[in-house]
Image (cartoon, rainbow, N blue to C red; front, side, top):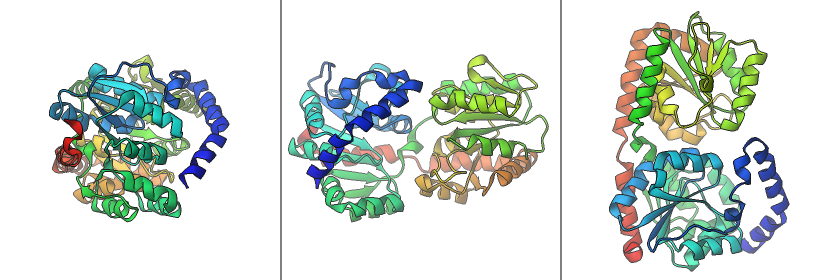
Length: 418
């Protein structure tokens, strides 16, 4: 089955190149370091190396407490951080600087992954969340490189998808040397697909400490903006900004400021055009602070989400008004920011349900309900204050996943990292 998978991968190579070229139109960085995507590297390799793979921005930032722990536990090793996107690579540069070596993980061609392992020869590897590549895992197993799945999550829908291709996915799951799952449900689904051993460790994102510098920046913004009520639409996805603007029109507070931060930087220009088209008075973060008559402040910056959460009285978490599965609300809670989510949160089901149960979040079913709920909360200070306290308590109550994962990795690696 893996041979058929590899042949299909070779057959769709032209489509992969077209996709790179297409994405490179908006992000020229996609046309850089192309050799790495096929396993050709020029970086010098240290004698001892631990490999961590974080596919994009969210996983890169979530890996921070784990990477810090790996460096502390194995100080004689360097960290190789691989990803798949330029934005993830830039996030790695912002978060880790020269603490890590960065490279793209190659596409899952047999020859490319073989070159990857030959060049870097890691002592062991840690894949963040749900990255599962059959040829990569088979190559690691062949070279006796233990590979672990950390902060692992798997929705019921994804589990059913993997089960349909069990002849391919089963050996891949079985090739993992261990899995640290976020929840008991994730653990059950991963074990059912052949992963072993699987243990529940919680969610690493609770252990990510918001940058004090960014929190201070948010407070500076707040002071400059003054007493205007501020609500944030964070990590919005394609097609969602128009719905958020529908909600904004429902907010019955004349001077309320909406801060709109799209999830993907390549869409900043598109969203700016939408605001202009709809006649909304807007200012972009890159152009400065909002003025007294600004209705929407467009967050067209990278790496400042903690500052936006620190600024806002209330945050709506994007990706959830449309059936996209939602984005993570944990960073908002860690910044003591009350949260609203839409009906579609299956990507972060457990964290969302726990936050709602703790009183740190509320669910809204439509743009209209979003606008009405924002109005109610911004006017009803007591309810908003209670949610803010609950958000902080919720975030702190779930910390400790990094230490549990590090202990498991140390036990599972055995002599591999000596």
